[in-house]
Every structure is written in C-alpha cells, then in structure tokens.
Image (cartoon, rainbow, N blue to C red; front, side, top):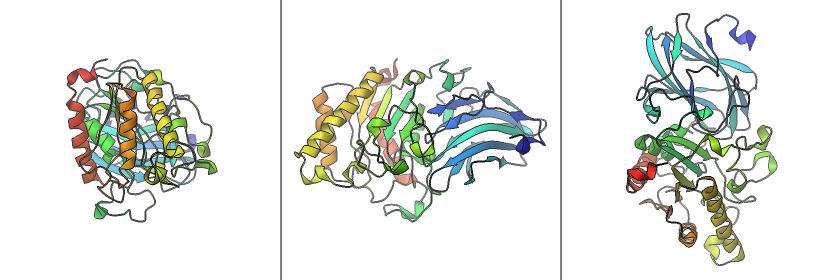
Amino acid sequence: MEKVLRMDSNVIYPDDEALIYSGRIDFENRTEPTFVYAYSSVCTVFSGTKLDVIIRNHREWNDNYLGFVIDGVQGCILLPYDEGVTRLHLVRNLADTEHTLFLFKRQDGCHYFDLLGFVLSETGSVKRPEQGQIAETDYLPSGGNNVSEGSYEPHRCMEVFGDSVSAGEVSEALDFMGKADPVNHGEYSNAYWSYSALTARKLKAELHITAQGGIALLPGTGYFEPDFGYVGMDTRYDKLRYNPFLGRVNDWNFEQYTPQIVVVAIGQNDNYPLDYMKEDDTSAASKHWKVEYGSFLQKLRMKYPKALIITATTILEHDSCWDKAIDDVTRGLQDEKIVHFLYSKNGCGTPGHIRKPEAEEMAQELSTFIDSFGESIWDR
C-alpha cells in the first residue's frame, strides 16, 4: 500500500468518521473493510479537484466493476483481476468546491473488495453528509453516525433476500428489453438499477440487498455453485462472507441492522435442475420445499420480530406453481405481518433478467404496496 500512496499525503482512511457505510460489510479490520453484498456502500462529502480510491479486489468470476455517484452523476470503473492493491482515478478536474460521493458495490458475490482509502487533492478535505445532501442516503438522520457501528437507527430500513434479479444482474442491457440476456461478463450488472434499490430510494429507506445470482432456497438446487458445491439461501441468509471460494465463511451479526420491511424474493432458481413443483406440486420434493420455505420465513421472523415480511418472486419468466406454493405457505403461517405480493407481470414479464425500465415498474408497484400499510409500518 505504501508504494501506491507514496506520492500523496492527503489520504482518507476507511475508519475516518466522515465516512458513512451501509450494507453487510465486514469491519473485522476497521482500516480495510470488505464489501461483500451488492449495493453495500460508503458515502461522504469531499472538497478538492480530484478523488482516487484505493482497493484490493478478490475475484472469482466475471469482470468486476466498482460503482460510484459523484455530484449526482453515476459512473463505474473496471477492477483489476489480480488481488494486489490498486489506486483508481474516480474523477479529475473538478471545481475546487464541495462534492458528494456515494460509492457502492455493483455486483454480487462474484467478487469482494477491500476498501483501503481515498486520496484527495492537496487542499481537499472530507466531512459527514447532512440529511438530504446525498439523494441515495435520504434515510440518514441529521448528524447520524456510522451505520456500521450501529450508533443510530435510521427511520426506515429495508432488506431484500433474493437472487440475481434482486441484485440487479444484467440490468443495464437496455437493448434487450423483454428478451433473453446477451452474452456478457458482468458489464451490464448494476445493483443501483435493481428493483430493490429503486424501491428503497422511492421510500427513502436504507437497504441491505442480501442476494446472490443463481441462488435458490435449498442446497443442491439453483445455479450458485461456489467452490464446486451448490449452496442455498437457507444456509447463507445469516452469513457475512458467504462465498467459500473467496475464503472463510463467517456469521452476520443481526443486531447491527433491524429492517422494518423484509422482502423474500426466492423461488425462481429453485426449478433447476428439476422443476418438481411444476411437474407435481403434491410430490415429496414439493412438500419438502414448502416445509423448508415456511421454516425459512420463521427463521426471519425470529430475527426480525416486528418486521413486515413480504414474500414474492419477480416478473422473470417462471411457472406460476411456485407463486401458488409461496402463497399457500404464507397463508398457512397465519402471521398477519407475513404477506404475499404479486407484480402485475409476475412470472411472465421477460425471459431474461430485469432491465432498468422494467425494474422501475416493479419498484413502483412494490413501493405502492408497502405504502398501503401506512406510516405506522415503519414504527420500531
């Protein structure tokens, strides 16, 4: 790291109090936090004419990109394949005034990255954002402290448990609206344009996207196969680092974040390698899935006793038998704050991943549904 920073003295390190974090981020090393989940973020207000970021990338597959919004303008930058420390130029030739930064993880567990610091111009400085100063963090109360340290509770908090759609995979392939996905290597994936993030921004809520492309509920199903072994959401929902290919797996501390709204968008990848629910929804495999799905919801209820839990899938094409199974389980639990939601194009909207305009439609429907419960749904 010294070699990368040797020409600069104006370095802002990750434990600086001017930086505010959100998401399931590993802070075991406060000076090198690891960003794991899509849409995990850090924001600040900085002054000066430039901004660089220092990272260490850990890649399993795909090209990996870092996302950022500076003064309301979004951009991204390709991360290196190697795991060395790298300095990346985010912006140059700015006016020597105050600027806003929202830096976020665009993709899921195809990679992690360690944040090592920011480099400002010689006259630059950083300060904590004020309420409403950064649009993506409207949930921040004035004078709030770091989200990661749990020293305050923002008014509105959401969490989405899901798969690639919830993480915004291939959301920027706008030339393929309503079509199968193009061949790609991660360049179109952007959690910022996921229905999850769009919904949270509409509702002015903080968001944790606990989602992974290809994941299903149960191990041995779906498409998420890290380190040559399929794993399911039922064994990953309570994890911080969760991809064994990228090192150790560790537990998430649920006391760090308590959402009032939880969306469970699982049940689309579960039809692979065998669509047993479609073939016979009374088969032993189908009955087993329903039992385990109900058990998963009850686990979330134990973690979040007061939350409104919304069960759903998405508009990505899938057989309606899965939505019927989800509805049956949801009703069977007889919990008035566990409810099932269907989009107007549920299961028949597109054969490919959801593009940004489609995600915006989903976000409008989902946010309207959440608003229908009234302001009291956000009470703690």
